[in-house]
Length: 349
Image (cartoon, rainbow, N blue to C red; front, side, top):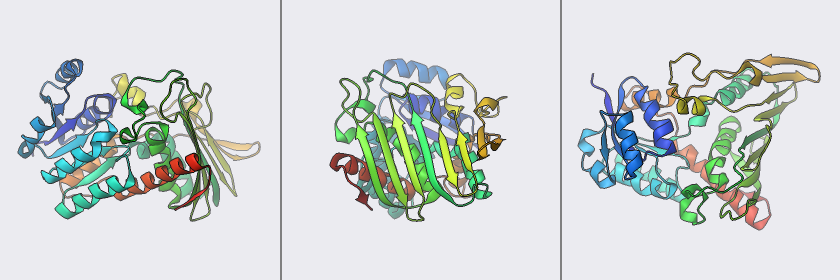
Protein backbone atom coordinates (compact mmCIF):
# COMPACT_ATOMS: atom_id res chain seq x y z
CA UNK A 1 0.00 0.00 0.00
CA UNK A 2 1.31 3.46 -0.86
CA UNK A 3 2.18 5.79 1.99
CA UNK A 4 -0.44 8.25 3.18
CA UNK A 5 0.54 11.73 2.00
CA UNK A 6 0.78 14.51 4.57
CA UNK A 7 0.76 18.27 4.04
CA UNK A 8 2.42 20.38 6.73
CA UNK A 9 1.56 24.04 7.34
CA UNK A 10 4.62 25.76 8.77
CA UNK A 11 8.30 24.93 9.01
CA UNK A 12 9.29 26.72 12.21
CA UNK A 13 10.06 24.88 15.43
CA UNK A 14 6.84 22.86 15.27
CA UNK A 15 7.00 21.73 11.67
CA UNK A 16 10.76 21.34 11.44
CA UNK A 17 11.55 19.81 14.86
CA UNK A 18 8.42 17.82 15.63
CA UNK A 19 5.98 17.11 12.84
CA UNK A 20 8.09 16.51 9.74
CA UNK A 21 10.67 14.27 11.48
CA UNK A 22 8.02 12.22 13.29
CA UNK A 23 5.88 11.85 10.17
CA UNK A 24 8.85 10.76 8.08
CA UNK A 25 9.83 8.25 10.78
CA UNK A 26 6.35 6.68 10.81
CA UNK A 27 5.94 3.73 8.45
CA UNK A 28 3.04 4.40 6.10
CA UNK A 29 3.27 8.19 6.26
CA UNK A 30 5.32 10.59 4.15
CA UNK A 31 5.67 14.39 4.11
CA UNK A 32 4.30 15.25 0.68
CA UNK A 33 3.91 19.04 0.94
CA UNK A 34 5.35 21.72 3.22
CA UNK A 35 3.96 25.25 3.31
CA UNK A 36 6.34 28.08 4.15
CA UNK A 37 7.00 31.49 2.60
CA UNK A 38 10.21 32.14 4.55
CA UNK A 39 13.08 31.91 2.01
CA UNK A 40 15.49 30.34 4.49
CA UNK A 41 12.93 27.75 5.55
CA UNK A 42 12.04 27.02 1.92
CA UNK A 43 15.64 26.02 1.33
CA UNK A 44 15.84 24.03 4.53
CA UNK A 45 12.58 22.15 3.88
CA UNK A 46 13.69 21.32 0.33
CA UNK A 47 17.00 19.99 1.59
CA UNK A 48 15.47 18.04 4.46
CA UNK A 49 12.64 16.47 2.42
CA UNK A 50 13.54 16.59 -1.28
CA UNK A 51 10.55 14.43 -2.22
CA UNK A 52 8.12 16.92 -0.66
CA UNK A 53 6.72 19.84 -2.60
CA UNK A 54 7.42 23.14 -0.87
CA UNK A 55 4.50 25.54 -1.34
CA UNK A 56 4.25 29.27 -0.65
CA UNK A 57 0.84 29.51 1.00
CA UNK A 58 -2.34 27.77 2.13
CA UNK A 59 -4.12 28.35 -1.18
CA UNK A 60 -1.40 26.42 -2.99
CA UNK A 61 -1.81 23.47 -0.65
CA UNK A 62 -5.61 23.39 -0.73
CA UNK A 63 -5.44 23.44 -4.52
CA UNK A 64 -3.81 20.02 -4.15
CA UNK A 65 -6.19 18.72 -1.46
CA UNK A 66 -7.17 15.71 -3.55
CA UNK A 67 -3.53 14.55 -3.51
CA UNK A 68 -3.30 14.55 0.29
CA UNK A 69 -4.60 12.29 3.06
CA UNK A 70 -3.85 14.48 6.09
CA UNK A 71 -2.79 18.03 6.90
CA UNK A 72 -0.92 19.32 9.95
CA UNK A 73 -1.38 22.87 11.22
CA UNK A 74 1.87 24.00 12.85
CA UNK A 75 1.68 27.74 12.30
CA UNK A 76 1.22 30.76 14.63
CA UNK A 77 -1.65 30.25 17.07
CA UNK A 78 -3.92 32.86 15.45
CA UNK A 79 -4.00 30.78 12.25
CA UNK A 80 -4.93 27.44 13.83
CA UNK A 81 -8.68 27.87 13.64
CA UNK A 82 -9.01 29.27 10.09
CA UNK A 83 -6.61 26.68 8.65
CA UNK A 84 -8.28 23.82 10.50
CA UNK A 85 -11.72 24.93 9.29
CA UNK A 86 -10.46 25.15 5.70
CA UNK A 87 -9.03 21.65 5.96
CA UNK A 88 -12.31 20.30 7.31
CA UNK A 89 -14.23 22.05 4.54
CA UNK A 90 -11.89 20.39 2.03
CA UNK A 91 -12.56 17.01 3.64
CA UNK A 92 -8.98 16.65 4.85
CA UNK A 93 -8.30 15.07 8.27
CA UNK A 94 -6.26 17.50 10.33
CA UNK A 95 -3.75 17.57 13.18
CA UNK A 96 -3.68 20.93 14.97
CA UNK A 97 -0.71 21.92 17.10
CA UNK A 98 -1.23 23.14 20.65
CA UNK A 99 -2.70 25.39 21.85
CA UNK A 100 -5.63 24.19 19.78
CA UNK A 101 -7.13 27.70 19.51
CA UNK A 102 -6.96 31.12 21.19
CA UNK A 103 -10.28 30.43 22.97
CA UNK A 104 -12.28 27.40 24.02
CA UNK A 105 -15.27 28.68 22.02
CA UNK A 106 -13.22 28.76 18.80
CA UNK A 107 -11.84 25.30 19.53
CA UNK A 108 -15.35 23.95 20.10
CA UNK A 109 -16.37 25.45 16.75
CA UNK A 110 -13.64 23.42 15.02
CA UNK A 111 -14.70 20.24 16.83
CA UNK A 112 -18.32 20.78 15.80
CA UNK A 113 -17.32 21.38 12.17
CA UNK A 114 -15.26 18.19 12.10
CA UNK A 115 -18.11 16.15 13.56
CA UNK A 116 -20.68 17.68 11.20
CA UNK A 117 -18.51 16.91 8.17
CA UNK A 118 -17.28 13.50 9.35
CA UNK A 119 -13.63 14.61 9.11
CA UNK A 120 -10.90 13.32 11.41
CA UNK A 121 -9.47 15.85 13.88
CA UNK A 122 -6.86 15.59 16.62
CA UNK A 123 -4.54 17.88 18.58
CA UNK A 124 -0.78 17.49 18.94
CA UNK A 125 -0.53 17.01 22.70
CA UNK A 126 2.82 15.28 22.30
CA UNK A 127 3.74 15.56 25.96
CA UNK A 128 1.26 12.85 26.81
CA UNK A 129 4.08 10.70 25.38
CA UNK A 130 6.87 12.20 27.50
CA UNK A 131 8.97 9.70 29.42
CA UNK A 132 8.40 11.38 32.80
CA UNK A 133 4.64 11.64 32.31
CA UNK A 134 4.45 7.98 31.26
CA UNK A 135 6.38 7.09 34.42
CA UNK A 136 3.94 8.97 36.66
CA UNK A 137 0.99 7.38 34.90
CA UNK A 138 2.49 3.90 35.36
CA UNK A 139 2.99 4.49 39.09
CA UNK A 140 -0.57 5.76 39.47
CA UNK A 141 -2.02 2.83 37.55
CA UNK A 142 -0.07 0.42 39.76
CA UNK A 143 -1.29 2.13 42.94
CA UNK A 144 2.25 2.65 44.18
CA UNK A 145 1.45 6.00 45.83
CA UNK A 146 -1.89 5.02 47.34
CA UNK A 147 -4.57 7.67 47.19
CA UNK A 148 -3.00 10.73 45.56
CA UNK A 149 -4.05 14.08 47.00
CA UNK A 150 -1.53 16.51 45.51
CA UNK A 151 0.21 16.76 42.12
CA UNK A 152 2.99 19.26 41.41
CA UNK A 153 4.30 19.91 37.91
CA UNK A 154 6.90 22.40 36.68
CA UNK A 155 7.95 23.26 33.16
CA UNK A 156 10.63 25.91 33.49
CA UNK A 157 13.03 27.69 31.18
CA UNK A 158 15.73 30.34 31.44
CA UNK A 159 14.99 32.98 28.78
CA UNK A 160 15.87 36.29 30.45
CA UNK A 161 15.30 38.40 27.32
CA UNK A 162 11.98 38.32 25.43
CA UNK A 163 12.19 36.85 21.94
CA UNK A 164 10.86 38.62 18.88
CA UNK A 165 8.29 36.05 17.78
CA UNK A 166 4.55 35.59 17.94
CA UNK A 167 4.70 33.60 21.18
CA UNK A 168 5.66 36.86 22.91
CA UNK A 169 3.21 39.17 21.10
CA UNK A 170 0.58 40.88 23.23
CA UNK A 171 -2.42 40.72 20.86
CA UNK A 172 -4.91 38.26 22.47
CA UNK A 173 -5.53 36.72 19.02
CA UNK A 174 -1.94 35.44 19.08
CA UNK A 175 -2.61 33.37 22.23
CA UNK A 176 0.92 34.20 23.33
CA UNK A 177 2.51 33.82 26.75
CA UNK A 178 3.58 30.86 28.87
CA UNK A 179 0.09 29.94 30.01
CA UNK A 180 -0.88 29.12 26.42
CA UNK A 181 2.54 27.79 25.42
CA UNK A 182 3.83 25.59 28.24
CA UNK A 183 0.57 25.74 30.17
CA UNK A 184 -1.16 23.89 27.34
CA UNK A 185 1.06 20.93 28.23
CA UNK A 186 1.02 20.97 32.02
CA UNK A 187 -2.72 21.67 32.25
CA UNK A 188 -3.43 18.87 29.77
CA UNK A 189 -1.26 16.43 31.72
CA UNK A 190 -3.03 17.26 34.99
CA UNK A 191 -6.44 16.75 33.40
CA UNK A 192 -5.33 13.47 31.86
CA UNK A 193 -4.12 12.15 35.21
CA UNK A 194 -6.81 13.45 37.55
CA UNK A 195 -9.81 14.44 35.47
CA UNK A 196 -12.14 17.44 35.44
CA UNK A 197 -11.55 20.60 37.43
CA UNK A 198 -14.01 22.39 39.73
CA UNK A 199 -11.96 25.43 40.74
CA UNK A 200 -9.00 27.37 39.33
CA UNK A 201 -6.71 29.85 41.03
CA UNK A 202 -3.77 31.43 39.21
CA UNK A 203 -0.95 33.95 39.50
CA UNK A 204 -0.15 35.21 36.00
CA UNK A 205 2.74 37.68 35.85
CA UNK A 206 5.01 39.61 33.48
CA UNK A 207 8.48 39.63 35.02
CA UNK A 208 10.98 40.49 32.27
CA UNK A 209 11.67 44.01 31.06
CA UNK A 210 9.70 44.84 27.92
CA UNK A 211 7.62 41.68 27.92
CA UNK A 212 4.06 41.89 26.55
CA UNK A 213 2.71 38.55 27.76
CA UNK A 214 2.84 36.38 30.86
CA UNK A 215 6.23 34.79 31.48
CA UNK A 216 5.85 33.49 35.04
CA UNK A 217 2.72 31.59 36.05
CA UNK A 218 1.35 29.44 38.85
CA UNK A 219 -1.95 27.59 38.52
CA UNK A 220 -3.78 25.72 41.27
CA UNK A 221 -6.46 23.27 40.19
CA UNK A 222 -9.00 21.60 42.46
CA UNK A 223 -10.14 18.48 40.61
CA UNK A 224 -13.64 17.17 41.14
CA UNK A 225 -12.16 13.97 42.62
CA UNK A 226 -10.47 16.02 45.38
CA UNK A 227 -6.91 16.01 44.03
CA UNK A 228 -5.16 19.38 44.00
CA UNK A 229 -2.73 20.12 41.15
CA UNK A 230 -0.13 22.88 41.50
CA UNK A 231 1.42 23.84 38.18
CA UNK A 232 4.30 26.22 37.48
CA UNK A 233 5.88 27.61 34.30
CA UNK A 234 8.52 30.31 34.18
CA UNK A 235 10.90 31.90 31.71
CA UNK A 236 13.11 32.95 34.62
CA UNK A 237 13.89 29.67 36.37
CA UNK A 238 17.67 29.57 36.63
CA UNK A 239 18.05 26.27 38.47
CA UNK A 240 16.62 22.78 38.14
CA UNK A 241 13.44 22.31 40.08
CA UNK A 242 11.47 19.05 40.37
CA UNK A 243 9.64 18.30 37.13
CA UNK A 244 7.05 16.31 39.07
CA UNK A 245 6.24 15.74 42.72
CA UNK A 246 3.27 13.49 43.45
CA UNK A 247 1.99 13.00 47.00
CA UNK A 248 -0.09 10.01 48.03
CA UNK A 249 -1.04 8.47 51.37
CA UNK A 250 1.42 5.60 50.80
CA UNK A 251 4.40 7.32 49.21
CA UNK A 252 5.77 10.38 47.43
CA UNK A 253 7.33 10.40 43.98
CA UNK A 254 9.82 13.10 42.96
CA UNK A 255 11.33 13.43 39.49
CA UNK A 256 13.88 15.87 38.07
CA UNK A 257 14.80 16.46 34.43
CA UNK A 258 12.83 17.07 31.24
CA UNK A 259 11.97 14.53 28.57
CA UNK A 260 14.86 14.21 26.09
CA UNK A 261 12.98 13.67 22.82
CA UNK A 262 12.87 17.31 21.70
CA UNK A 263 16.64 17.92 22.09
CA UNK A 264 17.35 14.52 20.53
CA UNK A 265 15.33 15.39 17.41
CA UNK A 266 17.19 18.71 17.19
CA UNK A 267 20.45 16.73 17.32
CA UNK A 268 19.31 14.48 14.46
CA UNK A 269 18.18 11.42 16.41
CA UNK A 270 15.01 9.68 15.28
CA UNK A 271 12.65 6.99 16.66
CA UNK A 272 14.35 3.62 16.42
CA UNK A 273 17.87 5.02 16.74
CA UNK A 274 20.01 3.72 19.64
CA UNK A 275 19.28 5.71 22.77
CA UNK A 276 16.12 7.29 21.38
CA UNK A 277 13.96 8.74 24.19
CA UNK A 278 16.12 7.18 26.92
CA UNK A 279 16.75 9.60 29.77
CA UNK A 280 20.01 9.71 31.76
CA UNK A 281 19.86 7.32 34.74
CA UNK A 282 20.71 10.30 36.97
CA UNK A 283 17.28 11.77 36.20
CA UNK A 284 15.41 8.73 37.49
CA UNK A 285 12.77 9.58 40.09
CA UNK A 286 12.60 8.54 43.71
CA UNK A 287 9.60 6.83 45.32
CA UNK A 288 9.07 6.20 48.99
CA UNK A 289 8.79 7.65 52.48
CA UNK A 290 11.56 9.50 54.34
CA UNK A 291 14.82 7.57 53.85
CA UNK A 292 13.07 4.44 52.64
CA UNK A 293 13.09 5.31 48.95
CA UNK A 294 13.70 3.44 45.73
CA UNK A 295 14.90 4.62 42.36
CA UNK A 296 12.20 4.32 39.69
CA UNK A 297 13.58 3.79 36.17
CA UNK A 298 12.10 6.31 33.77
CA UNK A 299 9.88 4.96 31.03
CA UNK A 300 11.09 5.38 27.45
CA UNK A 301 9.31 8.27 25.73
CA UNK A 302 7.10 7.51 22.75
CA UNK A 303 6.49 10.54 20.54
CA UNK A 304 6.37 8.17 17.59
CA UNK A 305 3.15 6.68 18.96
CA UNK A 306 1.25 9.87 18.13
CA UNK A 307 1.59 9.62 14.35
CA UNK A 308 1.40 5.84 14.39
CA UNK A 309 -2.05 6.21 15.97
CA UNK A 310 -2.97 8.94 13.48
CA UNK A 311 -2.01 6.60 10.62
CA UNK A 312 -4.07 3.77 12.07
CA UNK A 313 -7.07 6.05 12.56
CA UNK A 314 -6.85 7.17 8.93
CA UNK A 315 -6.83 3.51 7.91
CA UNK A 316 -9.85 2.72 10.08
CA UNK A 317 -7.81 0.63 12.51
CA UNK A 318 -8.07 2.73 15.66
CA UNK A 319 -8.86 6.06 17.27
CA UNK A 320 -6.99 9.33 16.89
CA UNK A 321 -4.48 9.77 19.73
CA UNK A 322 -6.03 12.90 21.27
CA UNK A 323 -9.76 13.57 21.54
CA UNK A 324 -10.05 17.25 20.53
CA UNK A 325 -12.77 17.71 23.14
CA UNK A 326 -10.08 17.21 25.80
CA UNK A 327 -8.13 20.11 24.28
CA UNK A 328 -11.26 22.27 24.55
CA UNK A 329 -11.46 21.35 28.25
CA UNK A 330 -7.82 22.37 28.76
CA UNK A 331 -8.48 25.72 27.07
CA UNK A 332 -11.39 26.34 29.44
CA UNK A 333 -8.99 25.84 32.35
CA UNK A 334 -6.41 28.17 30.77
CA UNK A 335 -9.06 30.84 30.22
CA UNK A 336 -10.16 30.47 33.84
CA UNK A 337 -6.54 30.82 34.94
CA UNK A 338 -6.16 34.06 32.98
CA UNK A 339 -9.37 35.37 34.55
CA UNK A 340 -8.23 34.31 38.02
CA UNK A 341 -4.88 36.02 37.56
CA UNK A 342 -6.49 39.23 36.32
CA UNK A 343 -9.16 39.40 39.03
CA UNK A 344 -7.15 37.76 41.82
CA UNK A 345 -9.84 35.28 42.74
CA UNK A 346 -10.78 31.63 42.53
CA UNK A 347 -12.76 30.84 39.38
CA UNK A 348 -15.40 28.11 39.48
CA UNK A 349 -15.91 25.98 36.37
